[in-house]
Amino acid sequence: MPLVVVTCLAALLIAWFIWQPRWEARRRQRQRSTPFPPAWRAIIRRRVPLAARLPADLQMQLRRHIQVFLAQTPILGCQGQEVDDEVRVTIAAQACLLLLNRADAHFAGLRQVLVYPSAFLAPVEHRDEAGVVQSGRDWRAGESWQEGQVVLSWADVLEGAARPHDGWNVVIHEFAHQLDARAGISEGMGEGMGESARWHRVMQPAFEGLQAEVDAGEEPFLDPYGATDAVEFFAVVTEAFFEQGAELAEVHPALFAEFLDLYGVDTRSW
Image 1 (spheres, rainbow, N blue to C red):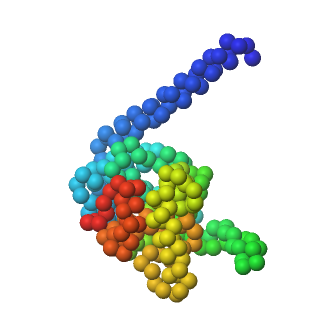
Image 2 (image 1 turned 90 degrees about the horizontal axis):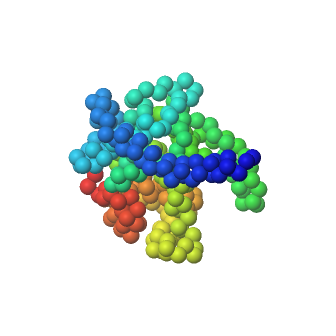
Image 3 (image 1 turned 60 degrees about the vertical axis):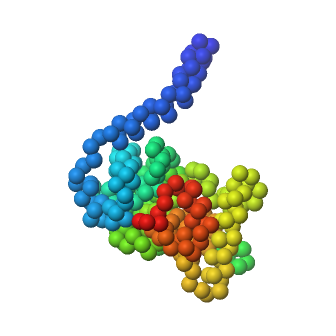
């Protein structure tokens, strides 16, 4: 290949890396500035009471994030699940709660959302006490894949949205995994994280405390599923932070403070 062609291609590639993020940011800004459909507001009021009761400034932010989310994210139905605005807006309104108070925040690695009518079978691996890995299938309400896919059960999406203060929300849970997969947030619970030292000092004892409560057969405040591993613990605490902020602050004040710093929104009065 002639040197002049290689030089031109290199220049074009460099220009793309410089301008592509700016172009994407401008496109998101245009999407935020379009009028928010009144029908979407009605869906939020009907389906997502947590979002409908946000303070006025946060509701405005949420609408802008929803517009970007729905403009950029394909939502596809599986096993006959119809995907209309009711489905799209209900999912987006819950997912975008995680982006509040960050003007240009978005789910950068997200490629698509798959929606099943109800719980779906997914391949799983179990490691027994002898260390042998066994494969099988299990029922799931949701999954988050590192390839940028979120899979949701529509029935569980509706149930999680309809009960905004029980600390269980499959959309919040799975999209917390998406944020974690991009930023490595739960990795801060490991040793030797340097700048994550404070995060580790709070998160690791809280995680181990939940495991101890579960092992003792107690009924912890946090969902016992969070005792599975650090990744699930992060998602479970995120659910509690957004749906049970005041209770989390009372039961685990240091944990609440870390998530307040992480998400930048005070959920205690929601």
